[in-house]
Length: 592
Image (cartoon, rainbow, N blue to C red):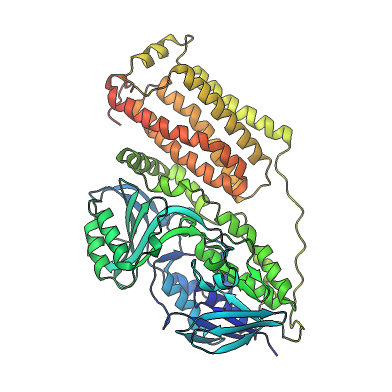
């Protein structure tokens, strides 16, 4: 007899598991707490290896055809003017807007419809209790019935109740200091096909995204530490948002008005799910219940469909349920940890608290959106180096194990590839010396010291704010920062080649070059406007370096944090000097 599988949650992950296991001949049932299938939800995207899963299901084209039609992302000013724009058509790979942008409910239904032919769905019910033994699990449902299953797959959300039944207290959530609300509002004639993002002081943001249903998808977010807001009732949550966004500007009044009548209001305080293990005897977690990475990671749906596919394939390949669950976790753990590696500083960088910081963010994004540098965004937002290799499952998709313990089809596991290494210690040190040496030479050539009396006199004559550090402090700080950059660069160069490592090395080189380039702009060419813009751009490239390095080598990322913090201060200082020292501008310099 085929294995009896119960899946809790008719989610993207749950429907994917149901489709594959049911198609392989297993006896699959799905229980969903909602009374009917849930079609609502906001934009999600599927990238990299997740698209390969949909391709293997024959659903990739349908998902593209049912996409939202979003053509890119734009950061806007209070009057609606575009400060920076990233168009999907101009990106090499996926950017903030992926090629496959689709509403959560549309993708879930796209998976649900074919899954219904392979599994039994029960709506309006949920798991109330689970008792396990060596042979299976006895499930008690909230509706009063019971059932016996060989395996229970928990594919619920970040706040999964079933997870807490089986793994009480084991989740160690990582709070991301961002409170967010999603809901649908009426579309207006002047809405375009861009994801429009507006930043307001106080760490607030308002965004609107298009869909294919004649409405607009709204988002309100506040960057702040968690305060239990996720546990409030809806009326209190809405009242809090009305108070926080009353003076935000742009289209906040329209969004708040739409919030009053929406029927799909969703509110949460973002946190990652951090589980030490995803299975216990005959119960296994997948999707957000196992590893929610939060929308900040931009990879949640990709993880959901990929994890569901890997879980299903390991169960199909193996005659031993326990071994299959272990193989599933071994295959997915690196990809999940990579996606969860987004630094907690990211929400604060994306949601500045002051008008100056917003202007610096917009300036940096404008620089990043230019053709010469925007290709980097595609690398940062696209597939990751630790994505699961699906090639091992290419020949094991049709038949599964039976409860008698005989596998109907079992493909051999591909042998592990030999371990890769990065540059040798000597070559890594030589690279560091050449790169930092070149940057130091440029800096030395433009230093405002006694060997350059003209530069020194010009710098001393600038109108500088009272918080400007003495020259000696600048020198000492840069020595420490460059030492950190050198150590971090060395660690990265010693890492094996991969998407994350290579992107981090590229950003390390960019930041190192920009340090020397900034001294040339500021001291050498006396271009205060250009150097202020470059300072803002360096904050973004520095933060991108930290975020990317964290996926390849966390110590290297940590070593760069003081560098990014100093860049933030330097950007504020450079902008203040630009505004206060009009006579300091070089020939032909305006108020840029």
